[in-house]
Image 1 (cartoon, helix red, strand yellow):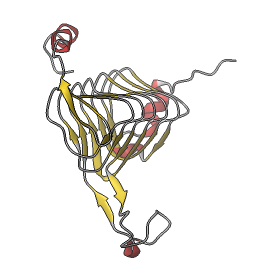
Image 2 (cartoon, rainbow, N blue to C red; image 1 turned 135 degrees about the horizontal axis):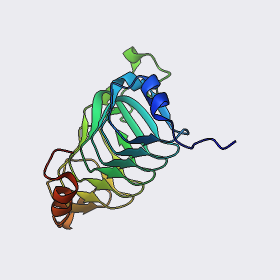
Image 3 (tube, one colour; image 1 turned 30 degrees about the horizontal axis):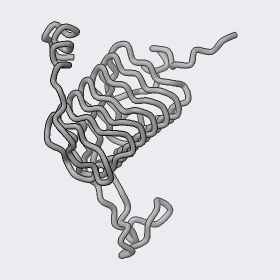
Image 4 (cartoon, rainbow, N blue to C red; image 1 turned 180 degrees about the horizontal axis):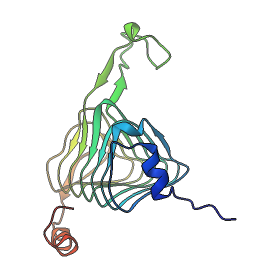
Length: 190
């Protein structure tokens, strides 16, 4: 007997997501903590070994590749329509203080820690290359593409190609894909 590598529609409904769109495929090897805090749009594909934890909103036509990690905490992570993560991307809406001014890690009581919590927002048509890291409080504006292995520590301007550590704008990104979006959706919201 072959087991489907993706959860069935019924299994997804039984998990108790905050909201769940149509045509959602999630690998059985994903780790999803507190699904009641996660909203998923339609036409979403989440590949093997991804971890999702905290307040997460995923739009429609979104792909999250294998081995990605979304640590949203209370601050939240939003991925708008047509955004995507290549393999091994990590998004942090919460982070310990690394300055040495306090203790770190989740085994330490809150009174001895100082965490940064700020929302992470990937706007429409954002794509992150393999191995990117996005830090708390960052908004990757509409249409941005971020090259592999980049550290996004500051918010971006729209429709740029970014790369590096820390990521910086390298050039403008084409907007040709907007015509394809129009054809796919018929001008309706995804």
